[in-house]
Image 1 (cartoon, one colour):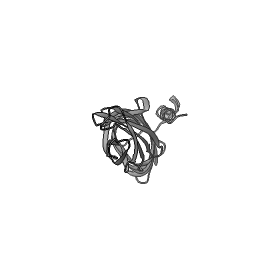
Image 2: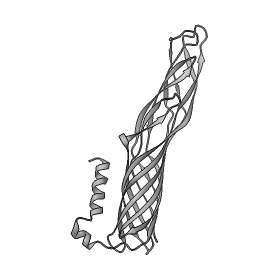
Image 3: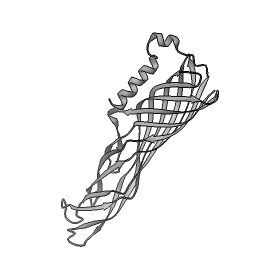
Image 4: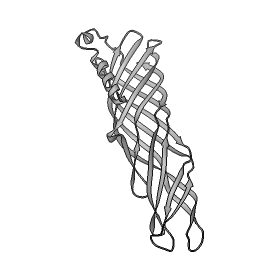
Length: 256
């Protein structure tokens, strides 16, 4: 079962409370609202290949770069207000960031004298970065299991800024006439970003140490349309980057 289906099923069970009998016995949530702060992880890694066409000698140089975005730290904060019975509306912010190790760049570079006579060359990038900053709008149903334990299921849209370092240029060193060979002296990169909507479902569990303060953890799954975001490249094209997915974390929980 995929993470999306698992969370959807889990949210359905929590929201329904196990049927009409369970709903009749469900504890009333009496707090006005909640605030959470968590640190967590984005555990999965993703790979994609960057293909760009960069202007060079009145033609286009073709650049191919493999990318590997590993998991990383998630910082998450959210808050909301109860609006009816156990139903609350809230908003949250989460950020995930990851660094890529230097990787090989394969380029096909035009000849400065002879049209349509490209040469192959390779070089290396420096460290590149990937980040996802998300605003989550939450519709949340709170289920007090006991006086100390509460479980909440949330569902709603998210608005995510996906930022990725991509190759913006290469500095070529020519061998001299007739320019049969070329080497890459350096690779320039720049951060490109795209703002995209997603759907997010999650479950958060809290253990209240005092009446107002406690600790807890969450699991969450975000899904973009098609599972990818099309980020513009320096060569006036786009590249599809996998984003979103499963996140989990733990931290402080507050009620007011």
